[in-house]
Length: 354
Ligand code: NDP
Ligand code: GDR
Image (cartoon, rainbow, N blue to C red):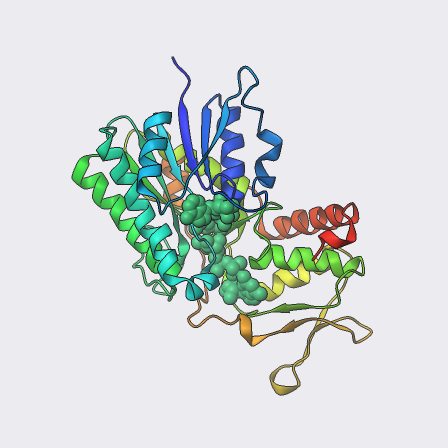
């Protein structure tokens, strides 16, 4: 049997890096779409990249963008993928309130562009499609735990764009018989997590404060609850979805939820700082040490115009049909991330911390 070919959009992101590694380990030829950037944006995939001049290189990068249809058509035509994983997105919920139109274009219409490219090239029967859908679709709580049948109520331009993407995938599956699946993934993190998402922002700050390189951490809503799992385990679920005879939509989650404030306590404890929550209301001071030094405080500028208060997923379907289960708990994840950032920062020149 010839080697399978996969195309990953968003290969330079957290999930792209883990998925590329997984597929290479499985013997795939992997093509990734990366954006042109004024500085290097391939840090997460450096360890798996090989010079294309090397005989036998199985990982290839192509410049592209989800807002550019002809570029996507050309890349798909050239690479002839058996599987496309659409991970590219403006993936930051808060940023989507600042850039709603771009987010709709990249995250919503970008998904349509890929599906249409497959059709234009007559590859509907050859190419399987994975869409990075999200628990943000559930938004305002309708039911807990959230499962595949829970009604959607998106609460941000990001989530609304991803709602379009979700339904266009379902529609193309039904209309054209495409093997197209939505992975409705709950939050997943790792040491490769983007630095502005809350978990990584916390673990980096904890490490920097521990090393005396940062004074304080400012956060937004500490009461939000998220179902946090490990990204490495979630990309395996993506792959499993495309190995099924029939396409379908699946929730991947741990089934447990944690408040942002608890994650703060864990991460700081992991780097050796014990914090205590001091005060509510107008005297609120935040998280402080025993000596009264307040290291974590709330800045309302990080509050979102509309928030998703509670996410907790029910991964039963994925377990029963895919055999997928999570392994790492949120507590273990916090420790892995905090210790990773502490180690990385110890070894980094001071001017690289900021
Ligand atoms: P990241 O933000 O780490 O990565 C996003 C990737 O998309 C990056 O490679 C980025 O490129 C690329 N990208 C952004 N805009 C475009 C564009 N217009 N054209 C081409 N590429 C683009 O996200 P994650 O890896 O965490 O998430 C992967 C996907 O899964 C995203 O679609 C996200 O919305 C979704 N998701 C993530 C969850 C999570 O908890 N991580 C949960 C549920 C869904 P660059 O590196 O140049 O910025
Ligand atoms: P989320 O992740 O919005 O769930 O989207 P994020 O880590 O950004 O926020 C989680 C919760 O933490 C609260 N919060 C803060 N968030 C950030 N980023 N920065 C802060 O300073 C801060 N303080 C408190 C937020 O209000 C929120 O409640 C992620 C992304 O990966 C999406 O792409 C993905 O679809 C969903 O997870 C599932």
